[in-house]
Length: 171
Image (cartoon, rainbow, N blue to C red; front, side, top):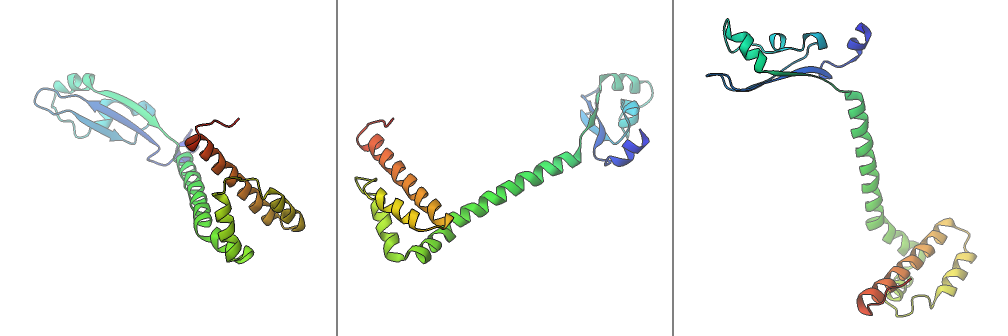
């Protein structure tokens, strides 16, 4: 028990007493870092706003709760959340800034413009044979993923046209 209390941070355990207004004394919230057995009005409320015989009546109105939390778990959760958020932010930067530059470098500027024109084409699968033959000729995994991504973008564009322009739902 003593080892457990030494390992915990002083902010991890506390007693919180909520005392409503009493006579001319305003309601207040008191917090102290005390053990579970000392979590009562007499140990937490300091300075005592009333004198003598009113102390007992005042303390009976107060509601004291012992609170315990794990700051290590909270810190770990926040670090994981921020790490995932940072990775997603880096991925967004890659998609918006680096991917277009890599496309221009790998495929050339004219082919990039041509592929952008193909996205708006009425027949999105017209050059599927060319895409497949190019992906088979290249052994680079990045190129295969790029072609699959372009195919997926064309399918999404065709679905958008069908749903919004022609009002036809694809199955």
